[in-house]
Amino acid sequence: MRRVIVLEHITMDGVIQAPGGVTEDISGDFAYGGWIAPYSDPILGTALRSQMNKSFDLLLGRKTYDIWAPYWPHHADIWPGVNSATKYVVSNSMTLGEWNPSVFLNGDVAEKVAKIKQQRGPDLHVWGSSNLIQTLIKHDLIDEFWLMIYPITLGVGKRLFTDGTIPATFKVTESKVTPKGVIIVNYERERQSQSKIDEPLSHAK
Image (cartoon, rainbow, N blue to C red):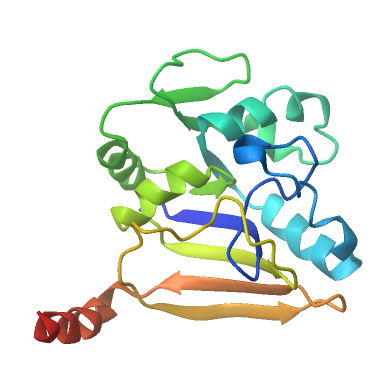
């Protein structure tokens, strides 16, 4: 079974919007793009390269795909595996793209992702894709969150966890802190523990 792994740069208050650049995603008049820049260091870079060098396919929202498609084909030296990976792209209108191999998903996305997870192949890595992540969370399709938590709050912007977040438990399988205060942590979903959450919720009704 393939796992869905969400990898995100995230602020202390949960914002994941436009970490890499000023114009990366300005929707909602977001004015803080590029907020990860002051926190770069060798430890964080090594951790990122370790993830980027793993075997993976990509599961992306349309906006993230549109940002990445013009860039990564010309920067294969930085991330060689990204171009050969299959890109599963969630879009209600797009059916073809120039950044191949790409597969476009529409309709019941949760059902389609669940079926892809049952297929043989590498894990599915999700970067960015804030809207898609809400669907994955709602349908309990995420197996791991690999997060880089930055010592900064922004107060506004797209957040990783929103109103559709379901009760769930996780265990920490990896953690470290960089010299500049970025917490790198991997949370693995504990599905067998769901009954521990459901029980007190049912008593509260």
